[in-house]
Length: 344
Length: 118
Image 1 (cartoon, helix red, strand yellow):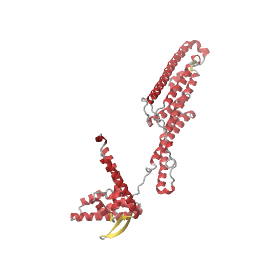
Image 2 (cartoon, chains in turn brown, yellow):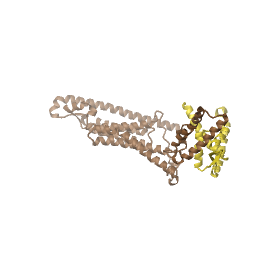
Image 3 (cartoon, chains in turn blue, orange):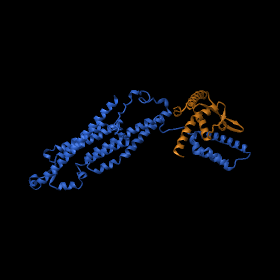
Image 4 (spheres, chains in turn brown, orange):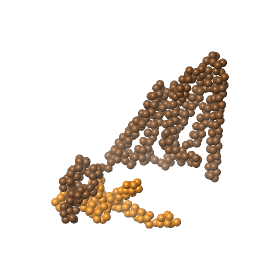
């Protein structure tokens, strides 16, 4: 019986203090009855091994005691779906705000590129904090609704005012080649888009991030980039900002699953703008001389050759891009025609 | 334990959970204390662990479905449980539900499967 006492003592220590004695008295009575029953069946006292078997069947003290605890959830099944929904939206927005602040605003306001990189490493911490706060709020709601159900009104819009007409419209069928995107892919596109934007914005202050050691050679050489490159640069920044913003909106609206054809085509058309700026550069001047009066004779010919080369390169690139847009528009029109034919 | 076995075990426990409560409530139309209740259920083919049954009795009592009292029997103090009036009502409703489900499942199982009907 010493083993039984030790077992019950171990269970008791894990029980709620207020009910310990009552539960242990009941457990003892039941177990003693069971032992007596077994012994009268066998016609002899239980051996130590049989006694151990009986306790083993009963289960470890921690398991037995835990079953006497009230069933508790940190966040129960009623609130869990809302919790995961809110968590996803909040983390997404926290991420977007972090990216905008750290990757776009900070490069424009700080002189240290290291600050930008360092700030990006803070993002996981901020996201964990956000998740922690949301979990805490939902745990509090769960606690209140379990303990004081009469004080918790039904959640409007989720349980009371929901209407089937508020369901979002059916997502349009995409063409067979259009694969569904994963959430991670959509988030990665925003993340790397913002990083690319941050890199772009660092270029005016730190030209070496694009030209490498060439930036120092350019500085020391008699040549300089023509002002058209600045127009091109800000067009590129505007285009990339538009892309990132549009993808953020897609994420927030939940329309990231299927890439929108209109959006893809619009991006390609907007992408043409910076190239057209370059193509229409006045006198095809992409590189100029810092001191034209002094260096014109010496470098004039090679300057013309360089500018003509760049112009032809840009023209070829523009032609490829225009052909791509035209091909996309043709495919779009063809699929639209097929869909109309199928609908008939 | 394989994934399939684990899945089966989870589903089995889920299925048993509600049935055990129903069986315990039904058995407690007559007064019992923990050990004899377990023995009775066992004899009728429903095996239930002590560590599941005894806390379940407490929970059902705290929900107002059972009444209990400490009483001496065979020179030992035991806690006896029986169905409360509220428990009787709930048991009647649960039995209705059980019978409906049982009938429906039996009917579903009796109908020829889709493949064999082709």
